[in-house]
Amino acid sequence: MTNKEKYKRAFSVLHASENHILEVENMEKKKNAYMKKIVAASTAIVVASFSVTAAYAADVGGIREKLTMWFHGEETEVTAENYGENSYKYTFTDSDGNPQEFVAGGVTIDDSGKEHAVSAKEVLEDLSDSVSYTDTGRWKLFYYDKQQKIDITDMIDEDGVCRVAVKDGKKTVYFKIEFEGDENTDLEKTTEVPKDAERYTIVE
Amino acid sequence: MKQLFNELVERYRDNLFAIAFNVCKNTADADDVVQDTFLQYYLTRKKFDNEQHIRAWLIRVAINKAKNINRSFWRQHKRPLEEYIETLVFTAPGDRELFETVMELPEKYRIVIHLYYYEDYSINEIAGVLKLTESNVKVRLLRGRQMLKEALKEEWENDQ
Image (tube, each protein chain N blue to C red):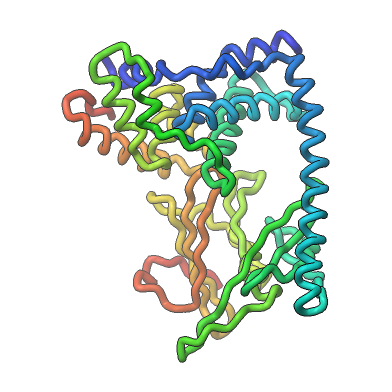
């Protein structure tokens, strides 16, 4: 018996539940429920925003900041609000018109080891470095500071890792991108020279 | 259209469940993935070239949805895998060990192994579904096989 036959036999024990009815008629019902869910989700976001704003207003006057970020290579308007210690809540509308929100934040650590809160804009700039898969089947790294798109497809090694060093004036920025499949990527960025710097492809 | 949709559901529901389970390790989540995937197919305006195109799209969507569930902070279904495996009735000796060994592989190897051995996809096709390079897929397949061989010994042949 081949491995494929063994594998198929072992996994043939898995079956979708009969309780989940998947006929067209039910899809129509689910479609309507799905639309209602989207409306409900939008309402929830507004409510959440108001409650966050109210809490923040009590502290520092309810400042909301309008910013722009690069989302998958497109300039997008974002609203940022304080969301507690060193973090911000960002809301925006994606290219398909869907409301999106996320919370992000962070600190920088100076030479003496002291932590400093970063601004909403700084957090966003760091997040705006992104990796995307294009319609032409190529992977592109978008480096926010230089507004530069870099084709990294041929830099991905056999382990699914891409190391690229981008020369930006006097500094060099090192990106390490791990590809997990299905457009999922884990991006690390540093200006400190990595131990394996010789493995990085240098891009001007 | 209705007939085609119902036929697709009948033909692929177990396949989608298997790949979703492979990612989520949980039947309730896998059932949700199957349902949501078919709902997305029902709602999409995407034009498909043929049934193989539909199949690849369904599998890809199911994998993405399953991964999203794994990442979700709100994940609710947490029935232990071991508990579920106890309820399964394997038909031949060694099947349970193979099943458990596969489920213990890291996710990135598990998905590639499943698409190759269960869905009969080629390396090129897996690369297309997962949007990885062929060399990435080859490495994952190779390492996944090595792990299976190491655990299963003579129960697992050396594939090329």
